[in-house]
Length: 182
Image (cartoon, rainbow, N blue to C red; front, side):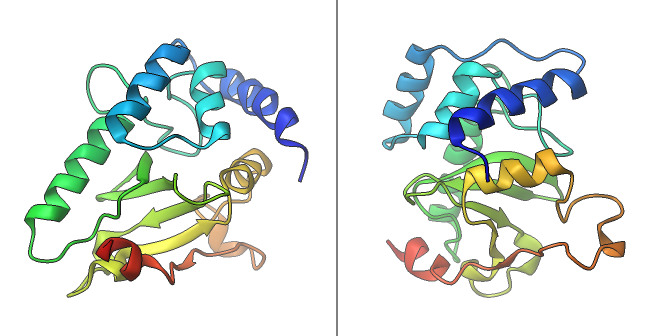
């Protein structure tokens, strides 16, 4: 994997090449304000993406949610999921896991902001039965790895991924239950 310092410009180049109109970047003040509301810091790479590439609007398939602003944002989705999880009979959304992309069908790509690497998780409530932890899968060991997969065009979400034997499928997140219980 190439150095992280090289990653943000490569993501920016692909974002500009694949998006018709990127939103403006989030300011450092907006990122800091969002972190204060969340109660945790964004991984440095994620903060850099919002500050240096755009406030969402690029990335795999359905594109990254804006961090802040009007409408659906990573912040508003986190608050909504945490609230619904706390109010329901089966808690399912752990603290510090920020949804960054809505895959549709209530599925999210989310970054574990409390992990050292910014692990990217897949939340699939369709897999949840009686236990919220069953809905969580590791999509990539780090945000950098997840972005490299997108840049290379080798993600499980590709239309022709079923034809590729080398595609790495998300695996269960082993610590989901303990994180949800915290």
